[in-house]
Image (tube, rainbow, N blue to C red; front, side, top):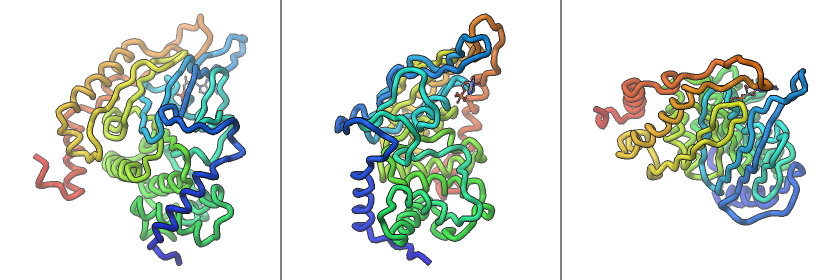
Length: 341
Ligand code: ADP
């Protein structure tokens, strides 16, 4: 059984060693120290071959810089190419044009220097929560003792609120708890950056709100550079420093970028009550509504008049009253009931 108390200086040193030795075989090129372009995405293109020989261009000329320690969300209509961009940053899919550089090294493959959180965390069912997270730590710190690796894993599981469930198997965990394990695993890798692909998309509304808070608290303590795909405007506003709005496909690219001026540290109540909130939300909504009036064309060569189903603005925009009501429920559950009107 692992002690839940982790010696902080030892943990800090451990993390430093992992980060300074983050030269994975998956990366190449010189190291860079310039922070404003920690992640550089330059003229990214993804096209798929089609039977008639004319490629279907999903993403084109997608250019974006992310600063070290920044939290950026990418929002856009369903099918516009958000996950396509993220999978290229994760190294799971190869660009057909342009390039991606992370911390001065070109991304050419998948690697543990990027902690990826998907909608469902893909846990090994025969392993406990602790073993699942430790498995990732072993990858990035093979030279450390088993006990040290387990301590790091336990530390992050405690931070996501699973300190009492270290020895529990995935089938005994709720969906929200499994996703907490997935988040702990991504942070425990001490990656250069976090990539989150609609991480709360499969959770019920209250669990989703709860886990957004878990994520923002964890992120605030680690300040990992993060890129998150979402179609939820409130989630994007709550978590992000900037929100990238993608145009509809085909050949989707960066449309607008919104600076989220809301102060940190953030909690839901102060964010919702902030005088800038509605204006920022309005900007996102009008971008999405404008795009909803111009649904994406199919990812097929030109000449095919077939429209893909697109998310309507109404679907994106959970009504103000529903949002407020969910927020109230969440705050009530979190012990804020006397502050909610
Ligand atoms: P989003 O994440 O914005 O919902 P995706 O990145 O998942 O969108 O998909 C963008 C587009 O790429 C969709 O039109 C999808 O059909 C198309 N696409 C994804 N994978 C392939 C593939 N292997 N071949 C052809 N088209 C694909």
